[in-house]
Length: 353
Image (cartoon, rainbow, N blue to C red; front, side):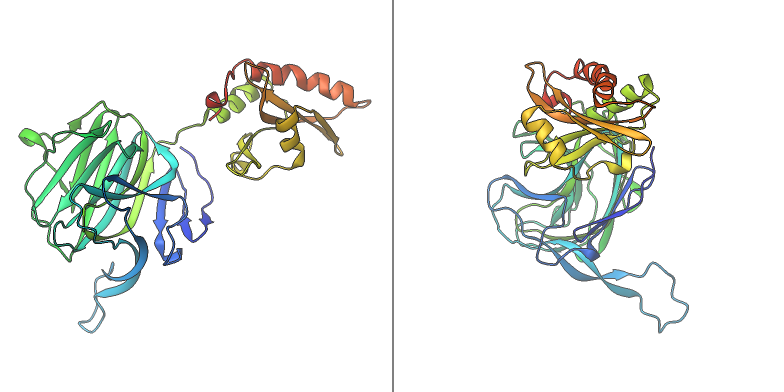
């Protein structure tokens, strides 16, 4: 488990504490998809129209007088498109994290829909043709689980449950290995033959997102994910290298982002992950050059990290304690075997990402 200060990401407040994510859509712009989410659609038809709207929420506190308001207006996430295409499944997927074992909780409201009135969560999502779903239906009065593998939907399973339209409901899903459990409004969802859990080996990890069907207008709020964090291959490489070379003052690995700019992919200080690099790291990746810098008590060396073909795919910045008579050549000689040992474990870019 880990603890990290919460950050504000372009209108989406994500608080991370002990491997926990909370989504506060009140900070998001009403006409934009919250940062970190991707709008996708499975099946046919147009993608959903996801936006932030205001809705009445039951008060979390017991009224002391009959004059106290029992509801409050809050910003919530809504899917508002009413495309009646039958096999149309709009999803808004959180793409900044991949989850192994987790517990996700959200509140949802089935607002409108002529053909369908459904809402749920997609999880262990790989792409539009591979994922799990647990959803509730007001018109069908049921809760269902099903998997989609290579675009083929498995048999839906689940009980008959009254899910009134226009009311807020809580859906909770827990994944542990190949076991899936769910609760609706605090009550365990019994699956086939009253079994408390589903066993499915199709996917062991994936993304999490919001799900609707056809012309369902659905609202979501109070979403919380508690999970076991995944450590990136680059971070594992940094961790193992530091275990062998504990006297390193600093160690960072930089990768190019989608805009071709270097960013910290792994670091001795986990809070630095995601921070931008500079021209030094960018040049090291682009041309394989090495760089040297000297501080008051430390020296830094930036070297390319190469794949099995000898092509630079990343940059490594090592910070070491300086000593009397330290020269650029001696610093490079100190750094070279460390980088080579890291390089021996990386055959391709995929093995860093």
